[in-house]
Length: 110
Image (cartoon, rainbow, N blue to C red):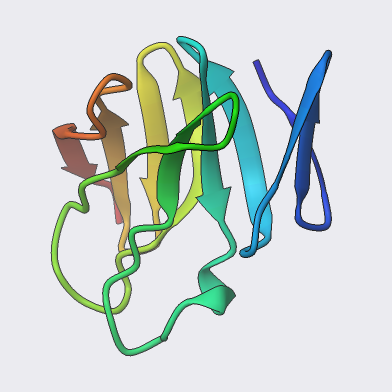
């Protein structure tokens, strides 16, 4: 389920979380709030684990594994919730394990 992002706050029916780094997108999957944080809030010269899962009370659950190492590896948007898939800035479509954040598959698309 897609969640509303307004500034640094993500809301859903009956709850909200406030983040120090602005969420670009957020979804609710298997009782976890999964957020793609704004890439611009991270150092540009390093890899960016910006796809992060939180419990509904805000505890960090996992950071998604990246398909490769380098500064252009940030996640940019969700494609699908089940299976959990996201676009990566480096040109990969990544399938993420929603339980662990592990990378199940990455397909280069450029």
